Amino acid sequence: MARVPYLEKTDLAEADQDLLNRPIWLFKALVNSPKAARAFSGLGGYIRYGSKLDPRLRELAILQVGWLARSPYEWSHHVKLGFDFGVTEADVHALIDDTAGKPTELDPLARTVLRAAREMTADGAMAEATFQSLQESLGNEQVVDLTLTIAFYNAVVRVLATLQIDVEPDYMPYLQKFPLPA
Image (tube, rainbow, N blue to C red; front, side, top):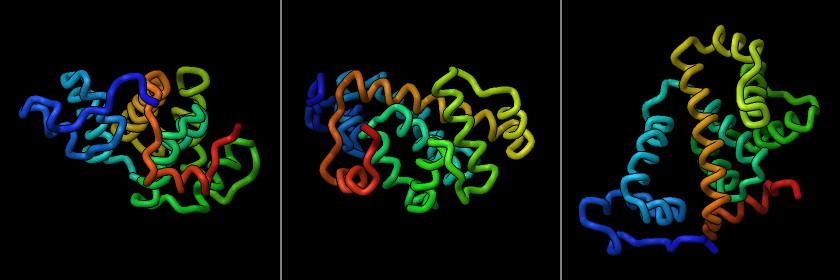
């Protein structure tokens, strides 16, 4: 159970009710601080709708963070969202295998994106070789967007864990189909 209440639109000032246009439990918890929720949503919105980064690569990076953090909420939400943005079931299985050091059919750029997410999550930064490879493939704008995406979702998984946000029933099938390691 979450450590803060899940609020509804009716609990908020009229000017803040738009923060729950997507009424997922994470947002229902964050609106306990409407200004923080708005700031959070600003960067999250840019990552999803404003960035030129390929959406499949973005979702693979986010999934890698969720997998490493063993975040049921993040993992289940982005498995579902990933499917909307070109991630396949084979990609999810390949991510799991790539993380374990097993060979996969993922293309080299996708594997480098996953490596970047692992390095930033485990070490706090991408290794020089990883960064250079991504910079050559993506260019400066997209490598910055990828870096912000990975960093933001490392923050998100910590918020989720600390606030103990529950997984909504609609997302549980994704956890059941692709369970996190114990």
